[in-house]
Length: 282
Image 1: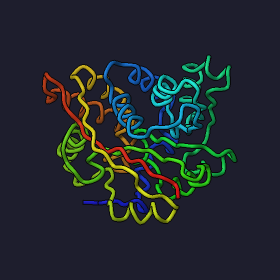
Image 2: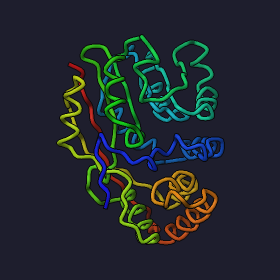
Image 3: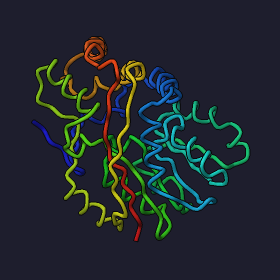
Image 4: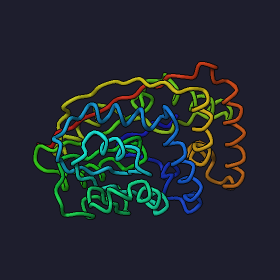
């Protein structure tokens, strides 16, 4: 079994950098799913925002913003907040801009395309908070934290979340998917695990200390899980499958596995668990 840490992430897990990744279809499905009732991203973002109170007129970055799940919640809670949305994908940002047309016209919301790991080179403005919702486990953590430290004001907040599974607690919905794929592919691979001891050393290295770490619980209906699987089948071919396997075959096999996995989802849906971290810059 391969266990990765903050500083060691296998190349095959660099999902969004692959030339094969279908950003156009993925972005469309992501935006549709992100607007569904009780979805994974909204529940996770709500818990994250609730753990990091800010001033009404604060300036924040939504890093790896997608089509704007977290931005939407911030705009609702803090109508005077200035928000910069950053994402790697031009397709995601096209939908992000469409979703916040009014706020972009008034300059409350801005959008910028770029690699989250290089945020320190993308803007010279200082911000009061940086949020990363459901994305940190796809990034090189030390590069990302180093950049974030450069764009935060002294005393500013870095808020991010991680599924319990990433911290080695094998329970809930995300763990269920990983276990099912490992069984179907006869694999011992895991997507990613993060050592808390290593995490604390890495955070201190870039001038952060942990202000809070809160566990949260969310529940997904069976119907919502079905929608989620339609999205995830574009992502998971880059996780467990052999590098040499053709991408088209990975997609086909991935869809079949998710179809089979859905048959095992209870009628009442499933719970998942995660942790919201709030870090303070020294």
